[in-house]
Length: 398
Image (cartoon, rainbow, N blue to C red; front, side):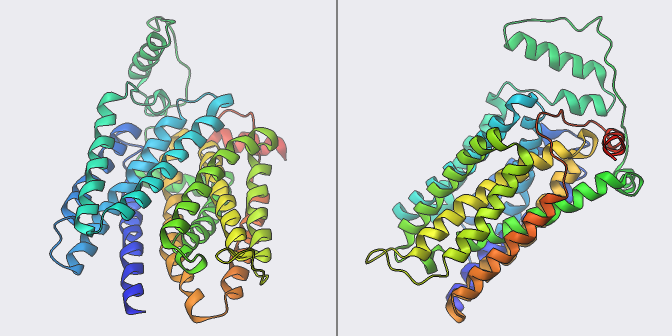
């Protein structure tokens, strides 16, 4: 139990760093930009991971894990905001799903590295090499800063240069020298952004509901992630199955979203998580190594990651460009609380009846389902640029 507690702390402390990073990055993405903010996060995680390979003791490793986590979610969230603001409405679902598939690919790589590499120091060193590759992609990728970000910051000339650059890449060059861009300028500081949540109640409502969904989805996701050793009989097979299930969940999120739309697809996945966790309570042996609980939990893993993928897309479309960095960071911060608690929830398998954590997962999924019910659907709708646009749309619907 003491050994498992230390492993859980190493996992959870990573997300403490991620939480701190997200709270700081709320002032980064909407100031220096999505791309440069993500680049800062990538540098931090590369340095923290590389240094972890030479950590002299457990306490030092914990500190370095905080630093790595600090950079990870800054990088991941900043990159998502950066990419999603380039995607047109009809392709945003596909772009978002493909982006999240990168997480599954890295999960698979980590499982294989864990299987092939015995020493944890060498494992951290191998992962730092992957981080260096990720860092290099920022300089290889031709994408400039988001033109939406430039416009809300009042930088119309920079936005025009970006749009001209993109038109040249697409093979249809357009000159924006004589084009007059119409937009609402939103140059503001961090405090003014916070005050906007009180000024624009519809934005506040959307944000709070999204934060609830992110917290619950993360808690269930990471309880599954760190509980596969309890559910399955072979550690690596179980984690590989979970990784493949995650990839399937992201692919399904693209397909289901295309058929049902943003809101109904999110409801579908959260509802599926509740159902499969109830099924997992049944005591049925399917073979010598597989039980109904194992299969149902794998389906639950697929469903909750599908829900997570939908929340990423849904939140990004609900948030206005002027506050997208802040809202995505606040939502992801709530997810970090969930991811911190999740590994400890998985420990319930060893100290209580297995039906208790399964019932807990089902109940939490229902809570997330209810929260999504109160959100508007964004299917086929352009993303808002300012909070004022959200209020206008809300008033028209009322």
